Amino acid sequence: MMFWRQAMTIAGHELLLERRAGETWSIIVPFAGAALIVVPMAIGTDLQLISRIAWPLYWAMVLLFGMQIAWRHSASERTPVREVMILLGVDPAARFVGRVLANALLMTVFMVGVGLLSLLLYSPVSSPGFGRFALVVLLFAAGLAQLSTMAADLTLGIGARAALAPLLVAPLAMPLLIGAAQSTASVTRTGVILPWLLMLVLADLILAVVGLLTARALEEAAI
Amino acid sequence: MSVLVQLEEVGVTIDLTPIIDRVSLEVSEGDCLAILGPNGVGKTTLLRLIATLITPSSGRGRVLGAALGSRAVLAVRDRIGLAGHFPALAGPLTLAENLRLVARLTGRGDGSVGAALDLVGLAGAADRTADQCSHGMRRRADLARLFLHPPQLLLLDEPHAGLDASAAPIVAELVRRVRNAAGAAVLVSHDLTGVGHLAARRLWLDAGRLEPSE
Image 1 (cartoon, one colour):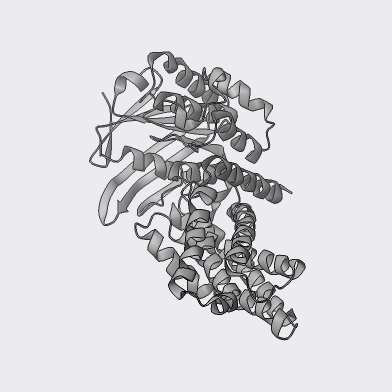
Image 2 (cartoon, rainbow over the protein chains, first blue to last red; image 1 turned 45 degrees about the vertical axis):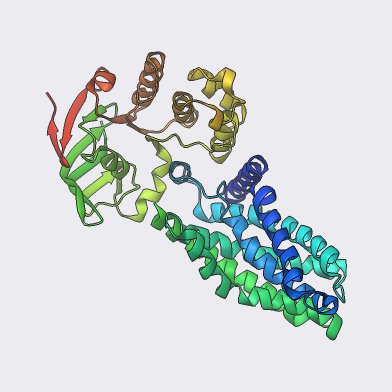
């Protein structure tokens, strides 16, 4: 009971911080939007090609920009705040879960927003349907939130964090990227997405176990 | 009276640089110890060591019965209260919201936040964000956190730095409450005038070594 109370309190705290600082909406979303606009300009007037690559591009964009949500400045607690959490006896696993919940929620909203922009700009040749798309987005956001939160802890206090964290996350996020991209593609190709959804679920579960088991070690290492 | 902090020949080396050198000290229930010394001699490091945030490189130590460097410290950390140089506040949040986080994480009601802010003279600034407050106000809010969740072992780093004269009784009241509740306080400062009247014992730290203060 205490675990979940702490986790939900941390999640609420992170969301309140984001509401005040607004980094996701004022920085990350505009950059992702700009990237979506730049790609068609680089491709040229081949509208068919743009429509065909719409979903793969979407997943690449949400991977690269979505991970930034976990590392936004307001979320990276300053050392004194982190030390107070430690001295209040907050369970590091509860802190991990709370931050993941907040990051996953922000990433989900971000992905829906970028998805709508992609539909508008790219007119993709096919659509996976709202229900399936929502399920894939939720599973992808949960996995990316866990991975990015772990990377945030692992690179805390490192000067080259902005460069190092994406290098850590990008290769490890491949199962998520492949699962999400193939889920979307399979809807139109074969209609069978279950194996890809299972891949996403499995990746999420593995990340959850690793995140919970390493939370204390990462916290102690960051002191 | 039971011993709350016991260090025996403890040393701390950070990045191959020795910061604390064979320090021994004891702090018992009801004690208030002042550790004095100029800048850069290891006062903050010693305080963080006692707070279990640093593991000793040599020697042995126990804090609230838990051996430093062991997993036992995890069980006693919530009885340690530390206020460092930099207030532990999230800038975009109001003072009340910052304290509400502490209240909720420690199972207290939100109602206790107003009383804690009142004790440090910030009742009227509860809805100001920490970014909008002066350094002195932020330090007061940090002290309010310690009134809200009173520790058994109180650790204050330069407790009067950034505070005006009217805040001195707040620090004194915090120390008094902790001592009266079978706790102890360790204050570190470069300035004897601020902490001298609060501390029953004074030690002088120089180049990582502790000596009795005059």
